[in-house]
Image 1 (tube, rainbow, N blue to C red):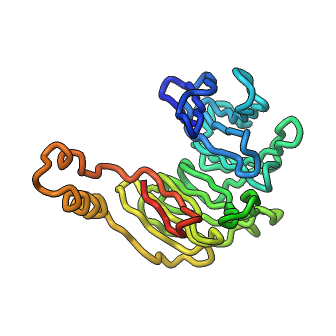
Image 2 (cartoon, rainbow, N blue to C red):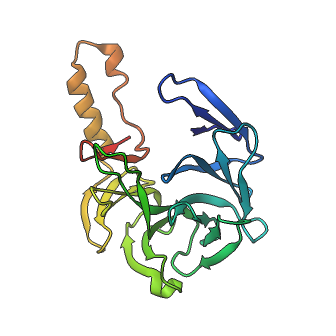
Length: 259
């Protein structure tokens, strides 16, 4: 699925690439994720503080919608954990709210001490399915959050309190735009920053294992230029890398892919 600037969410057939469903949000969509344990579920967070769950087999209607408890609070990111039963929602008020999706979507609790600025991304750890098997991916209670304050925090959300839950704090030293887990068992964490840099960590410690600094775009552009060659001016003009958008772990190839 993809979210458009006018609030529309569109889903596509992965084989034929034609549109299947179109859903309309009343506000800007800030995050759009899948529930890895349910291939028919699509979840959107919005600037009006709502989180909407769609069953992509159904047109026009939402399966469930929840709203942040504080008036004017924006939902900036959402992630589904505990195998489809809990939603974590990061807000512009430096809070992470947890919703129970098994009933009416009531608030289970809130983390409000780890960050000092708006939370840009929350992601539950996903354990990939093994290559060549029919098993689906699963999620764990481990959650990572990223914020404008330049920190990324790792939690074990099975713990009762926020103080007990926090396992690790990563000092990225720049506002974090995208974050996620990678690796054969999702043991690594990648961070993409507002300065267009990429940093890699292990979830169990705060040591930056690799820092691809602000020269990353120039380096990638140079590689593309060399691959295209100097005799194709049109294709050469398309080799400049301006933004680092996100990362994706390819379980089959055992490689982290940068978009």
